[in-house]
Length: 445
Ligand code: AMP
Ligand code: GLY
Image 1 (cartoon, rainbow, N blue to C red):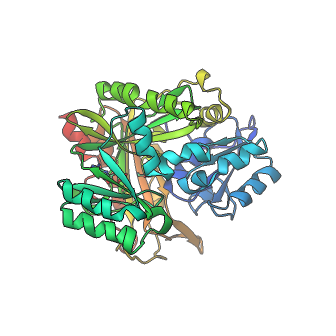
Image 2: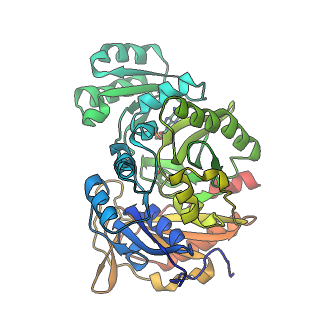
């Protein structure tokens, strides 16, 4: 099948802009891949990037959280637009630093990024603006006795969350009150998340199916990307430990047009308005983590960036110039932007190292990458690879994000196409889930 949404990447003579992408995972590879297709992009730098990204961009050896180092690089190299992948530099205020000296950057300011950086802030904000979310209470370390009492007075399951950034490990769903009390002790007593865990949110458990909705905005005008679904647990049927995400697909049919309309009216509009009213105008990508409950969509969490691995599915579906879209968000001219989508579906299967999300080995040679071709509707985004003697080797827990793009009406075919590519790629200890996208088929029945 020949699909026009995977165009051959080439440097065009009309090229102008220099872009810097910050981060080093599959999400950043997808951003670089999509930006490379823009006629107005001349040169892409990625800091620090990975071996897969190096095929499309010039790698810059500056860490993603080195805000001042990144600013100096962008200023010196006359970067026209910087695109931030991960949350840590955003929460540290990279956007404020760039904008102070007039550099264009895609992402929210430090105060706006608090929607992800502080769960307590996000929950109080939602309460103030009547945005549907789980009932909750927040407690500081000094209030640990009250927190214990709160747990004893509320029936399980309960969810205990660290307030600050905890690399995706800060939320624990507790099936019993005893488990919740133990987790509270880990956060407050054993201090496992340090400062990030010095305030906790304890909230009611919401029943339903999860989905991720991405909003691109300049703070006032906004456009939606296709709704996606992540697969957070390590084993099939959502069993086992939480990971960074073992696969994703989009569009996710659980987010029907009716659900999307409710998300827009009940969540997105009040969030953007509320953030403006609070003097925290939100621009960039707002990731709305949803639980689709019997009573409608409710917010599980906000993130201040694209999801990973969801980005690997939603970015290829955009029928348009990503550079133009992200620039318009950065400069506040989003009213002129209309994001169109291909009539397609995308499925991304993460290939991980044996042992992930616990200890795993790296340095394994990856075979079969040459057998996977864009002409067949497949793109392999690299999450963690290195090059050694001209060969790609594994360099992390999540290694490759094998992404298939197919017809929207044929999610099943797109899933098969992703798995047929996955089976042609091998490395010692490669592990992947075998049910990515299956939930979507259930809805399509
Ligand atoms: P968070 O870091 O807030 O996104 O939480 C991580 C994961 O925990 C989510 O993706 C959900 O699977 C689960 N979770 C968090 N909060 C709740 C809740 N209130 N009810 C049900 N599941 C939740
Ligand atoms: N896919 C989950 C995240 O990016 O946080």
